[in-house]
Amino acid sequence: MKNKLKITEEHWKRLSKGLRADKQEQMGGAYLGFYRTDETNVYTVLDSWIHDPSDYSFQNIGGVGIHADANARVFGKAIKLQAAGILDAHSHPGKAFISHTDDHGHQNEGGTLERLRKTRLALNLGILIRMVVGASPNNIYADVALPEKGFEPIHLIEVHKSSGRIDIVPVNSPFEEYVPETEFLERHSRTLEFIESYKAQKLEDLEITVLGTGGTGSAFINLAKFHCRKLNLCDADRLEKSNCNRFFGAVNEDVGDLKVNAIRRDLLRFRPNMEIRAIPRFFPENETLEVAKNSDLIVVSPDNDWTRYHAFEFGLRYGIPIIELGSGVSLHNGKLERMQAQVRLQIPGAPCGLCLGLPDDNLEDPWLADYKHRVGYVEDKNTGHAQSPASVATLNMAVANMGMVLARRYFCHELGMERGLPHYLVWDEISLRVFDLTSQFPHRKSCPLCGENRISSSYWMRGDTLPTWMELMDPPGECLQQAV
Ligand SMILES: [Zn+2]
Ligand SMILES: [Zn+2]
Image (cartoon, rainbow, N blue to C red; front, side, top):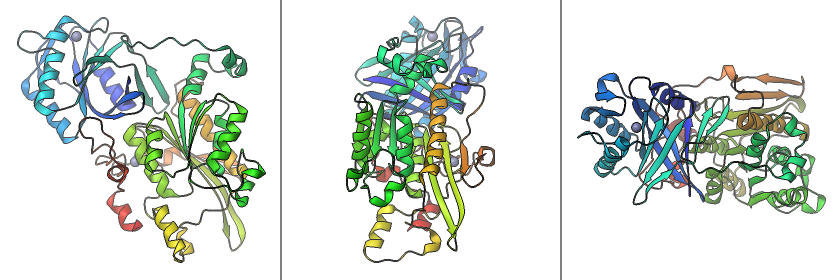
């Protein structure tokens, strides 16, 4: 098993600023969420702290101690957050390493190990990460004490910034150096003229889950196949003749088959070494949750906002960036009124999908809508429920293209890291213009998903926490009232 730590820009900044050692060692830490995938233990940072000068009982090079009441404050908050564990960090003026005092403590104050052991016994917190930050940037030692197993290295720290993901390899990580393969170098000889090969390889190795493989989803997949090798496709729909005005990657014989099967066949013809999982289920059914939590990126392109809402919440909870795609042609009295498509980028720690304008009323469960239709319930056309808008391949490809560009910048930052990425782009096919709406949709403090009383960071329990989707996915009260 590998161990991965995910942290947002805000908390990374707080820790790396606060743990600047010059004359004295500094201490701080973070509260952790935890989940487990097939190959990786993933620790997510829920919140962080840096100790005040008054918290220290002593502080010099080679050892620091914290007053009991300061520790009690930290552990009290861990319980309040229902954190799965704690990250305990301190700084070294020189190199990041675990010293003798870190392991065994200083006089009666106790070292990291001892302090953490006591804490765990007292509070039954399952997970303890210790981190030492050295003087030079990104010089980090990090390991995790697993119950009954002792310390294991943290292999990778992912810092999710609004300008893209930065990967930090701790000094004690056994991460192997990357050596590009000949086939990869040949295929990407023109890409590598503007993206460094280790970055292009990072893109290739990402695992991307696509929720909804209709018009926009299939368009995105047909761009992603040039960069990425691992795709999970989730959609329970079958291909109908009426989809064939905008479905990428299918041939006539595919009509009647599952959309995910048609796309999978097409991708494997394109490149036999792709790893494609075709899951004929709708998000958030359990099989889709399992592959989604493994992902580096979730692309959300369903035909309803209910799925979008739940995908946004899922991404916040698990620290996974979301690219959401949508398109539609609207008519007024039978006349073409609008042809627009949008892409929203939800980065952990940045404004969420709701802040970015996803309507949080009228979120109707698609299963319920489907059931009502089957029993003869007639929808009010004004609400727009269950009636997916007309669409066209040009719209879908335009928005899929913007989504793929954002994905490439997020993971490769080929233009450097100086600017944040746009989080909300709208393509207007009538005026042939792209609008960047990012500045009009800032983070809202009252947001039920990412605001102060957010639901996405609560309910972490102890141990291996994967709540069932019923626990995980309850929409906030205001949505429930509208949806039922
Ligand atoms: Zn130390
Ligand atoms: Zn929000």
